[in-house]
Length: 480
Image (cartoon, rainbow, N blue to C red):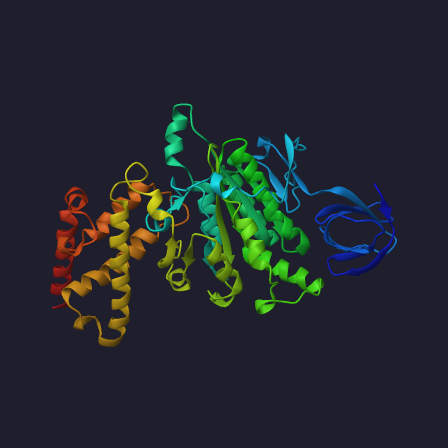
């Protein structure tokens, strides 16, 4: 192992070193300071005479007297099933006062690309316990379904709720017979404050969710370079649990905006030609390398499902981060500021939300046979109610027909009873669909034109329609 004392320049998170023999791209570097402190880094660029190194722990105390050793290997993550229940920092080191990790193996954090012909199509339901997701934008195993949020919206609360509640009902039933795969959560937080980190950990410990989770926590005051490797460490852990230990792993990545800001910061330090809004031109490729590590492999029992969370700067959906994320992933869950200001928890706006793989993960044998029809009808009815709200602002509610008023009432009830459930309520899919039928039963049967007659006969609640009519007539009498 050759040692160099030829540091030429230190710029931001980068160190430039003169070399006399080739050094591999992504090779791990150890930098030893005169006082004995050691820092780790990674080769970012390599030429015949110079290499640039990004230092994970920051370059603040490094000077030209430091020695640089190239270790001849890429960065690895020590993985073992015993990582479940542990809390690690952004570099993968334990910060929970637990025992040292004794790994079963060390895996490259870059991961191995899944051969497209070996991929199995995602089509099994994951229950999050959140009606707006399970009922209207269903998550399936192996999918990548991001949550688009904005500054000030409660995406962290929703992330924790999903981490606590998410299960695979089909596998739960199999596990009762001693078979099937277990469910695990890898929670990766990037660029969060110390206060947010404490809240996350307190929630995981208080609810017992930590027992089946691996938590990675990169703080806002940690170096930006570390933020680049944190999601790769988390995904490497998830892949090991899924494809070596047969777990169904849900990976929650929050906040991808902080990750992309770190990319921009490092790109500026390297004096790269910027792309849109100053972000590096390779950001699409970089995000795809992370998102495409979700999936299922034919012949393996486990799976990796991703829920990346990002805050849209200025709530702009055309911003490069949500824009590129939307291209790569299979839909989005949209959080809404207006719903949040009304106290709806979680404030999910189902109209612009979408799960492209939903149709393959619902129905008989997966959720319930009427799921698709109920979802379509609720979506159409809520959309019509939303349009009528705009009309009411112009002409007033008195100018609307009885039918229009029914749709307006349904839109209000949909937000109050279906979407708004709080962050501590865990609804199974049966309960979600039953609530949907309660709402749809307030409409006349002839309005349910997206639902099969058979399901209307089985699930339509005549009493709900009568109760709605009685409530409206008593309201009219009171006004008179």
